[in-house]
Image (cartoon, rainbow, N blue to C red; front, side, top):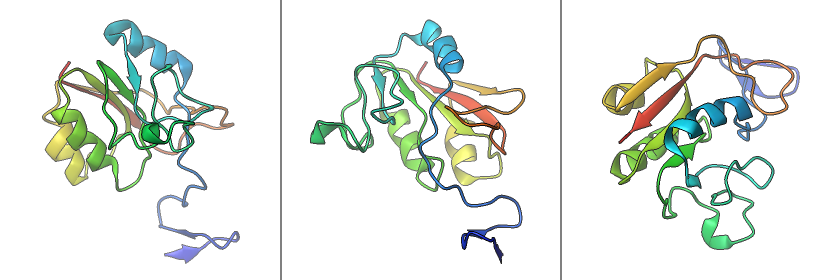
Length: 150
């Protein structure tokens, strides 16, 4: 590993992200919402939630601040934080009664990919790189959409 000028550590492949709050592009959400008519946005924020029923760390209702602990209603959209916790979102998605659609980094070498994505109902790799929220550039990694119970 090496240290970059801002004092953050990085791997040989990718710098450490400054945030994990990356808004889902509206066109991508709309495309999947047409197919599944989502009720819950399980990993959002007050500035980027796509539905009125949402969970996020800054939700005004303290009971709705943890999407992993909260009760998802109906078909659920998830663009989770892209860290080691992805496996927790996938585990919960597999236990949910309705369809769950997750926007995830395409990391086909990970345990969570092999254990949960390959057993999902649908797996769609996104051509090109996704440009999240108001970002100036596209993500430095490929993305995929995973459909569980759908």
